[in-house]
Length: 510
Image 1 (cartoon, rainbow, N blue to C red):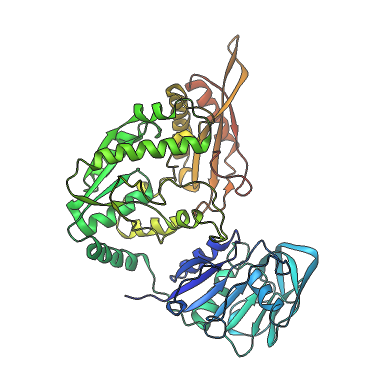
Image 2: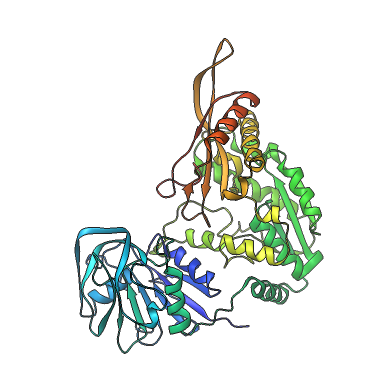
């Protein structure tokens, strides 16, 4: 079945992925492409959205998209930079704003138009720009204003082109989802039929056609992504899927045996491989985060290749790659979205692993992966698991890695995570973990002075990890957790709580 698709041209905004997610929440499939590398055939898309950008349209280095196949031919929504670009280069004027327009604002004027159906004066929107539109472009008609921004929204008469200076994709724009629905469904006539059930059926059918009777090997991690990928493949090819779960010695406490037990009930063909010693040897003496990631990635490939070679005639490697991995691993001039960190599950394999790659979840965001898993009646506890980094505890131990440090952090992490579960807080947190700091501090236990490790606890709320806020955990919980860690984990005498948001900090410390 063919679904209507929406094209999002990325000009480097930190919110571009949020636009895609908001569109997907309307059961409409959307794709992000760099503005300077659009898809070859834009006829495949029912509507186009131009993202915001950190760039100014008044700059000599302003991004110039080729809109010749889009503007006037397809419904187009220009957000922030896109709105200013259309104005500045189509007969209007953009100038530096007297005051930087950033944060919450309220609509003070709304023109009656299908674009603003069910959105009234007073609706809160989110501004994020230092330039402002002084004069509308040729044939521009004003649709909305705020107290400080006269030209907050406009349309081009004679075209299905709409433009806004605020961001409907962020949660602070209270009617942002309604605005996107008005544009996509009412104006662009996009059919909202892209659902989890439809995704499962179509993906399974595609996998059957693509893989035939070929054998596929998949590295399970115990996380949501690889588990949902495994179930989709299991539905498609059954016994021809061979799953390998490698213990790199950097998993959570008892996770290797617990996850293997969980997979037994799913009917999957899973082999557990304990390679802890091999990974710790590969990490010996390494402190640099990227070197640690690479050492873990290389050791994993060696172990995985060894195990895959024991399966006769395997032709495919399946991976749980999801859409943010794909986007974050592209950088713009290349594409405007900058690479934040290396992803060891994106970008292929060494030449000596002669396997083709299949990635059933490549088009999905994390929350969509969970919905797809739920539509296949997968275990709620598994689908509700917090994300866990591929390199495991290695990037939560700052500095070099030793078996002793791993055990300390596993014990601390177990107290924290089990405590969240016992207090009914686990499902209210998107991701939580503990970090072992390369710091010893003075403490007093009984009548003795101690000089032991300090650990940081981290808990964030998010939808997909692109942005995140620290969670305001109850003081009583933090107090009990700190006491439990210091009393139960030998070698730790100080606990701190990380209250940084992303951005500017990242969720993980390395």
